[in-house]
Length: 460
Image (cartoon, rainbow, N blue to C red; front, side, top):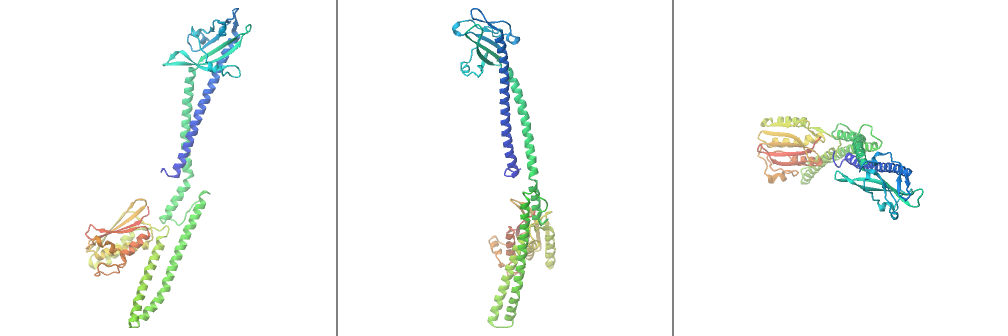
């Protein structure tokens, strides 16, 4: 999956949103669970505080006394992490009353938290116990409230503390379970998004295959039912193909009409000029022939340009080259010229058969004309940004110096008048190849003569 693809963008954006939401939800749920445990813990401490209130009395000197021990045995075990203590007002200088678990030590209230008591007069805060576990003091959760006991006008401080570390393992287990579930849910969501994107974009893949079939000449329009968002695009593309075909057909018709319209006047002028032997008649005949050559040239160029713009044309390479090779050998059989054709399997030229025959035929005919007897023709494919077809024609003739390559490509330029021809072959091949986005390159052949490389677009 490419980083600039639509699928990658949709999946990446969905993954980022899902991860952010799941992590936020996990943190929020963990925080809510911790807050709920804390409230529940405070409720347990408040129950112990209520039990103390029900069992505390005032002695004659004002010191608090416990009439009955609490049922929770944790307050009897030394340094158990569960403590309670009752303190008289400081100015009375009376001894405090504490649980057996505190031994001789006493808990110190958090003055800052006492200043922010709740609506019920209870202050909640954390303390550190004197005992240490795993090199860390035990964390205590404490609540404190002041009461005026019956028979006294003084405010007595009631403090109850519990081992809050007992809940840490429960919180840790909950978080591990929560994040494991959310991670599994995240993976499931990513898989669901991936499948959803692939399913949602499948019509685009179908359209891509249809376009490939049109480009390779296997179809002439986009077929199939597409979703309502894509169907207008398919309809417009089919109309574009139809319009393109109609324009090309009209161009071909106009080219043919022009050729017929000019042929008769030129023939009349030629015949009239040939019937006279004057210098004027010879000049008219000469210029008429030049006009006829130019008309033929530009009409052929227009036909090639129209064919090059045709959508969906494809030509099998091997049958065309093989037939051309046999034809050239028959034409030059008195000279014993052999044409060896080697073509990779399945090669197709993206264009009209007539244009391919004209280009390849010119090259092979030119090679046979200059060869001493051997011509090799090969065809292969390669790819860079697009797929290409490379036709190579080698001969064992005299070759051509590199400084003459540019001259050989010029229209009507003949470097050796001893051989028949018009000098238009290579230039026509170069023009036609350029119309398809290709090119012609001259070089030295392994056989000792000239090598001509023809680069043309290929069907993948």
